Image (cartoon, rainbow, N blue to C red; front, side, top):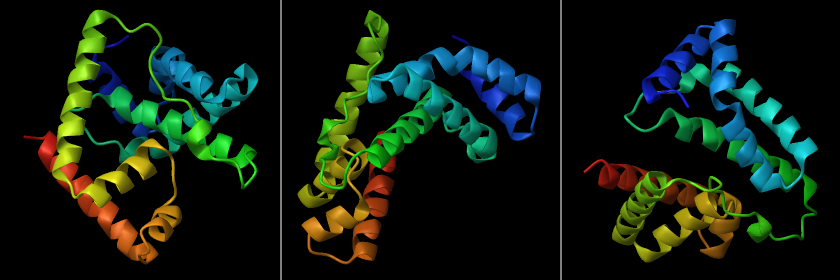
Length: 180
């Protein structure tokens, strides 16, 4: 895999509509993103379609990527995962639970990657613990379980805009906590 700065530079060039950079970005990241899609969808053919959709989104949204000090792969993986989850949701009947979506993890990560992931997970858990209990539960439900804002507004008996405000403020608090 390329260095973080190489991926960031490729994304910046893709934002300028550089086709060669897009090809290089695809070559450097497609195996990982395909793994993410396949793990969510459990169907190779559908995962290939979703991977293609993901790269269309990358092409169209590269100008939205901001260098934040976090891994650019996180941004790419999030796009792939969300696209795969959207495909799953579209295929599920309205009555099916979204709880059937599997957790995403890289297959057989090396020791260093496991240690980094464990440390990041601990930091996130610690920061979530600083939020009010209902706010933390709503964040988990929306961003980790794939629940909708409307579902959470109904669950907590608050207006939809209030739920959006809770989540926005909670994410701001999490970002501040994680940057300490």
